[in-house]
Length: 286
Image (tube, rainbow, N blue to C red):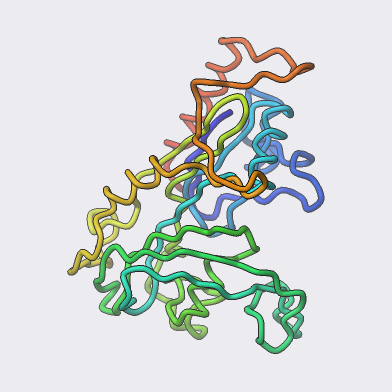
């Protein structure tokens, strides 16, 4: 299983209806990119404008194992975001059902239950923890950690907007058109990912991209909760296990082999793939 640190605006969305068809890295990242491992498959997806951790399977069996964890909601995910305004509570549970928007001109978007044109809303739950208050290009913003406990389309963006604190740079659910001129990207980043597959515990914690040293427009002035403590809590929390009725620990040291499992890749194949993945993540944006 490989872990990729994805840049904002690099495509990752697989074709609907299949978690492994038409999702090879060379097809998704561009025909000019040659992937040395022909069976790489995305295990999940991020919105087009979201950066951060993305899990890539090295073969079909690994993709199926990871996909099963996502389907059973046993994956731990956390995102960093800059949202408009100063969120007053240090922790907020957002519990708005989300459905597809059938309004003309908005059919590609989602909306919360009760909105005109909202079709088939489903229960959706997000935990929001405030890290810092500050200014972005002179406007008040909050830096937050978001933990989606369900996996609806555009869930974090819709929930933050419904809360009255849209994500900075979100052109779909954010401020009125023409008022998102300062951000160079949507300020949403997949920060932490843990997938407890049967073969291994796949874990990734990416660097924080929302720092004044990386973006001079961002100026924090009040620390509400230190990110380091929340990282430790994420790593020690048991894995959710809704299908089994309770949490269970992520145990990378005790793999559970299954009969009929295909032989693992060779060390040379794995080294070649990991080298390519590391080179791609370090490649600067043009």
